[in-house]
Image (spheres, rainbow, N blue to C red):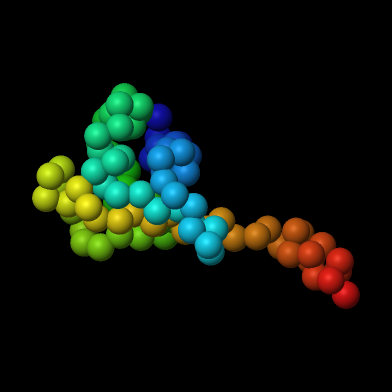
Amino acid sequence: MNVEEEVERLKEEIQRLGKVQPDGSYKVTFGVLFNDDRCANIFEALVGTLRAAKKRKFLTYDGELLLQGVHDNVEIILKAAPIPASEAATDSAVKN
């Protein structure tokens, strides 16, 4: 699995384990992700995948390197998916 595929899988897992926020983002703690059996089986290097997703601006969290135990309560926020331009145009047309 390449990095892009792993990031996509990570986004799916955050949606599965996290709580949806009013703005459409998802929030989960590092400890929940790290200790989930399914995530443990999918991601050989969860921290590396998190860093790749953060670098690509799909998610945010405080700090650079997350460690089990020490950072279990750090919140990881998967940003809300942007509305595709075609849908945004349709939405504005419907409102007018």
